Length: 253
Image (cartoon, rainbow, N blue to C red; front, side, top):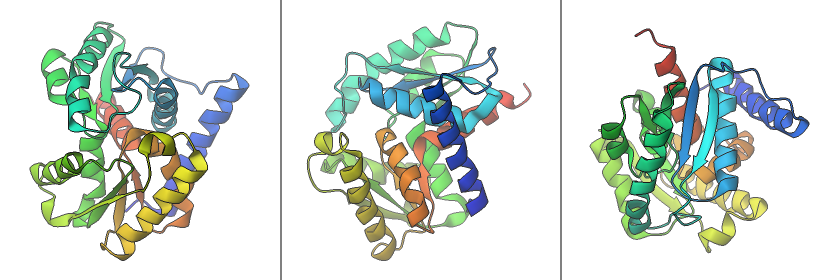
């Protein structure tokens, strides 16, 4: 389990990155290495937020660039939405990979739409935030749950299937969904934080989760704000994928 000092360091990094952006001073980065974070939806605000979180995580190991799937809805809430996003994700990723400075790609939606297709299409490492966050949450055999704003039953079933496909079904403690319209909720940070906090409490107290995955890239900032309220780690999918990408590109060939 990540210790409190480690989590505090990441909160400080995220805050420092945000302050640097506001002041016009970006953190030092390796200009020769780029990680492109692909948001499978068209929400530019969410893309920027997730890219900032990833940049804070990788530090000066690389420059993170966020790119949106312009032809998709602003929020993907159903399996059909995810499937429809795949061609755009592949197109954005293929174009990005044509730049020799781009060392890795991140598909930044919890259901990893287009991840296998993009891996087939390019010759650089591709990471999915959903896949990586499952690996991190399940570390050392601990039980884990998911909280999300998306109530679609088929999508929720896909989470169980992903846990099973990755070998974590015995540790999986299910999903807690926030009430209300997800599109409205994600536009109001205070309401979003309150709803997610209650869902996390239910996952821990009623489901027995010892780690809780924040089920969706746009929930990442909320996870960082809420973490001080909980002893259990709120596992942020964007950060998990960013760490994996940074480790891969730093590894010797």
